[in-house]
Amino acid sequence: MSSRFDSLETGEAFRHCCACDRNLTEVSMYIVNKSFADDECVYEMAMCINCREAMNEKLSEESRVAMFDFIHDHANIDEREQELGSDADVADYISHCITCDTDVSSLKNYSLGGMFAGEDLIKGVFPMLMCGKCEEKLNETISEETREVWDRFIGEHFPGPPSEVRLPTHKPVLI
Ligand SMILES: [Zn+2]
Ligand SMILES: [Zn+2]
Image (cartoon, rainbow, N blue to C red):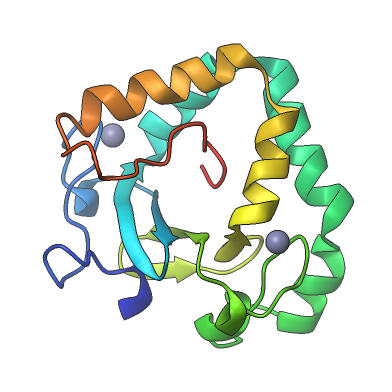
């Protein structure tokens, strides 16, 4: 497990799905998502594949297609996969924004996504990094309904943060 995808809160690998609380060693796959603002992690979570699919079903078809298209229109996924293969360093996958190719060293706002089977990071489209600007552009392509599903999810699972905490509302990006 790459430490880049460990929980910053506990300093260890994520153990539970944020939505159903199942132990992640008991699920076939799960994703880890983190958002950074001004270089600080403002939000992190792990979600099992079942919850991810349940969440996806709630998103409108239109939005799912829009998100998929956005990434595929802006990133050459095939070329990326060819270049990186399946054994490149994790750092190589997340050294640049997947859609605008900006170097992460010049970014302050971005999100990270990774997919795991047990302790193994699965390499393919994930792991990926998307910069804040691209996330905003992507957000413009998704429906109000999808944003509401996401906001409700965040509200249910990450309750009561201090008001100054910037939750990644409207960012169903790397799920
Ligand atoms: Zn779950
Ligand atoms: Zn970008």
